[in-house]
Image (cartoon, rainbow over the protein chains, first blue to last red):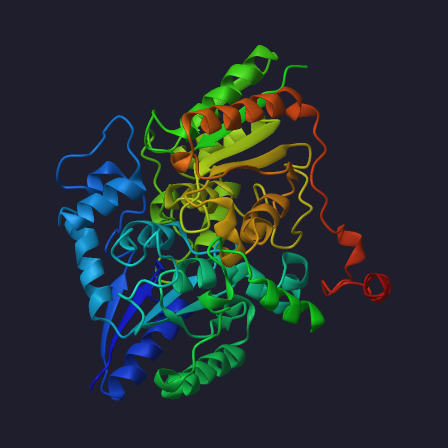
Length: 242
Length: 242
């Protein structure tokens, strides 16, 4: 069956490398028969702040407003704002979600962080009681595709890219239950020659040809942890011996 | 001389534990003779999206808008939006900056990420050409003070808190040249008993008494890296031997 792809895209300008990377996804996956939808966050003027306006009904506690609780309750009652509900519908439909963004301050731009904060609602796509194992998203894949402002070498001082992306890949995507595909990192396209930019895009287009068949990254399976969320003693021992 | 303190505060509700933590700073540091200013981001309806609206003058390139370049140019020309300029003035005055927020998705809330993206302007408080060593902020201290939604134990699966905070502490604060104080982590106050919440606050108030004298965290000094940003061979060897 034809796959559905959602691109959550966070760049202000149509002339950017991020746009070219996003357009490559639309181009190649559409040619493979996929339906590709784009949430263009800046064009949508997507609200980044998690506020009481996200709840259409009455608040449980206006004076002691807790976004995590209020948004969960509101989701259960079907009272989340239309903007959030629309994004959640796209997410519910998608087989693959690609987040395309320029890295700002070692993370996602504020507008995309707002999308995570507001669309990934407690109850809908994660559960505080059952982190990493809610069923809603378990058959969906997700991945980060990002451009950096610095050259590869700098990341020796900055810290490994895997460490930098850990809060996003483990913390957001894996926690929500997504199967996480390896990130696509475009190193400093703004400093690259025309030829190097072209080569980066060509590499991405090649990867996209087989993207839907890629195996996801592996994370430590949940059954290796005990009920208090600590690694089980035998797992610890095995690791220490290695 | 009396110190100036800036609290960048990101919680929606005055009844929250984050508010109590912020109020403790105001209370104790004011009593020590400091001037304490609060940027209450939700109350200010602080814009989180980095857009062309942040530039008051003409854009260098509207069609190929690059926020990093445009905001740098705009800062040099004194053309940044009033909202940003005001925050930058507060930052320029401050001796100590405390970021008080609830952790959302293993990072700062979107509204605070927007503050980083927009106020920490290329040229003003960091330099792409000289990361980690711009002089503007070198005498200033900064720290994260955060509440979590999960209990300590969960962070075994989620990954160590130090790793989770690395993109913020090294990537944002240290990169900008701040001296970074150890983070204050309030574990799951929403799940804690009244007594435990009180104890957490009491611990914070005690720490605040000596906060201005605390030694900052240490990061690998820049002179251990060569011109290509790799660790120098002798540093590598010494570490390997350890």
